[in-house]
Length: 313
Image (cartoon, rainbow, N blue to C red; front, side, top):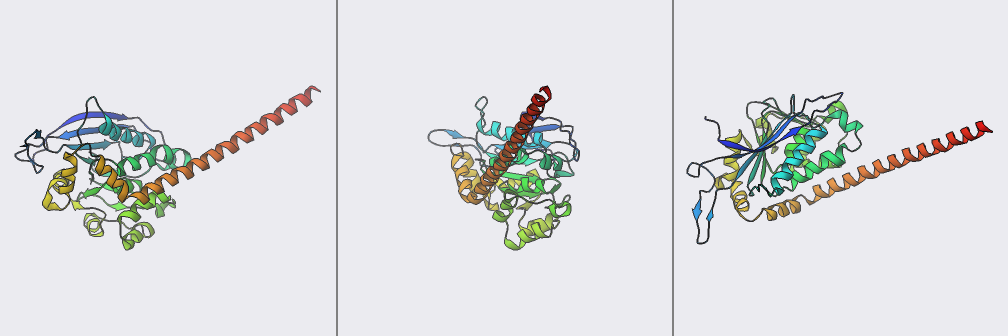
């Protein structure tokens, strides 16, 4: 099958990240626009109305490339968020609302999860980097689809779950929330997206059994909506007969997609509230810890000054 024609809109560098558990040389986040000819495209062809010509739905592809395994480091997360923000809000140039697909050119991994060292040592990791990206993805005013090209473990699976839809490579990769294997506790924000999107017995399998799902098992469990790659994702997101595309098509062609984002906020109200409460709890804990450390430093300075004054006497 010939490659899908596309052109690059912008590329953002992911700075290198030095970590004890998952050092990364950096990488890139690239956003492209897929060029499908109207006559051969599954999206609505250009048509004429009484007032104007309406173009086909834009289809954007966000590709994250951070060797060796797309680990979710602070620099990865902040660059990803910056790419989404630029795509949504840029005015020069501006990007019309459409459909957003995400994937990675690293064949083995969609993402191997959080940078564990940062997650446990950086007190701002969740509030400054992780939760803001999840919130942006969850409420993004365009239909989103994660094309899971390889393994998606732990935080990598969470990243995919925060998309509207998921397509999985039928030949490579497993999905697994494997925090039980390394004794890592899930925050309410981490668990909430699975609770919102999965039936109870699958939620139990994912969290309490750390079950590994291949593509067929993931489809049966409802973790993904289909199998394939970019072609299948485009077809699912734009083909009315596929069951998903009709609503996505209409929203992408109207206004700025704000209504679509508002509908997401309503559907996932509980997840959004959990994200916000988790952020506030983390910040409260952090502020309390900083306050205690500063008070301790102040007391130590007072004691040192008292010792110095007594020594002079």
